[in-house]
Length: 143
Image 1 (cartoon, rainbow, N blue to C red):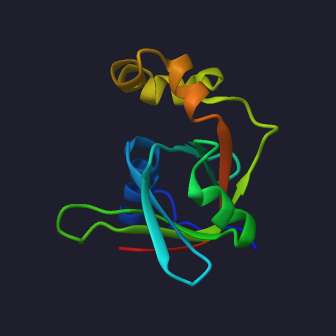
Image 2 (image 1 turned 90 degrees about the horizontal axis):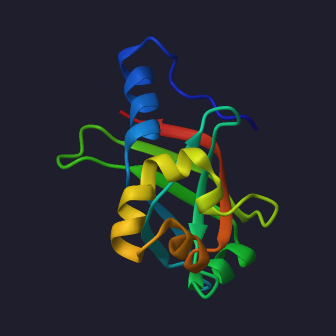
């Protein structure tokens, strides 16, 4: 199933595209073995060329075991009052073939400054968050 986003050039389509490109924090929600939702804030990079979301995880993160058992995940962006919502539904999978965070120029441009402030360097962030994950959305909801 391929993702169908709102039409570019429309108010909603332009807003969704801008938010996917510019927002710095998104939320992923996977479920644990008992079916309990497990939301987590993430840094992310929207990849418009294939309509996917690239993010990175620590190798010890519990989310990896959840994703291996059930890759179905929600990714969403919200605002302070709930009137500008983007929800994507799809699969989040490990992608060891993808480069690390410090080796993705677009990711470095988006998060390099904050990574250096929080971790000392982009390379240190990439070493800690060394597992590339790719979210492949199938459905969009939003307003």
